[in-house]
Image (cartoon, rainbow, N blue to C red; front, side, top):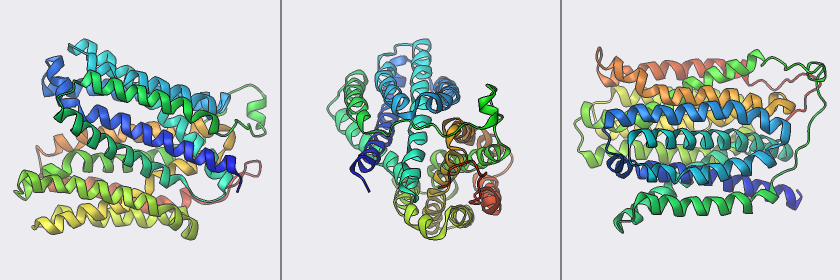
Length: 390
């Protein structure tokens, strides 16, 4: 294995870590930014939709740009945009300014999310073995680092503008320092549809993968938004104990992603999605039905373990289906997946008016079952003859 390929993998790790770090720095400072802007929780909830909207639009733009100009060009520019934008929420003094800041910040996040995943597919193709899940694990590591750094700077009474500004400067340094190590753009032979100048339609299998991403990332969003409330409101756990639910899920997700690549190399991506989604369904069922806090924590841990490798397999499958349209295909899957993540609170919240919170968890359980059943047909290894195989 040549040195340039290893350097490209390290650079990709750097961008995933940077994205997790910058997003984490924003999340850690949400209460302080909310106070500075003088808005309520309800207004913040609406403004967060602008962050999601910016990210979704950017994903649809950045994917085709990565296919045309190469991820080596789009990734550093996107990283620089996100790094510059992270300071904007810290400067906001009102709802309108904060909304505009979140729209720009979300746009930068969407651009980098898709382009770095497109480059990760390119690295994985060069390695000729699964390496995608480890990249997603380092995103989580970046979030953990942000939590630690943010907690320390908040204890020093640093303002959000100062801390986020420092994070942005660090991000700009990483964005340009890692850029030379990225792999060059190597367009594949164009298909007849591409040669004719007309934009080829998105293959049906890509939309199926995107639908699965929506369902599974909705499941992940449910854990992010409702796991702590589940322990606190359903099982009457103390606040400190309830926080362990999300901690157990997030830790299991991170650890599982570091292990998934080896398992995928041995058993294949369909097995990872099939048994991972099935384990997720079992884990969330245990959490939902458990009358005991320790057993519920075990359930959330199993849920995290199961989901950990699923989304990377979907991104990888989308990117490898057609190397000449990897960015566009990844953008479809990532875009719908992101909508699923945002839909978690919107779907589960209203259902709690009719049934207890733990009963609503059987909707994501059903989504996990669907993913487990669809794993084989959607992640089969056959490719069209003119496409490069993994």
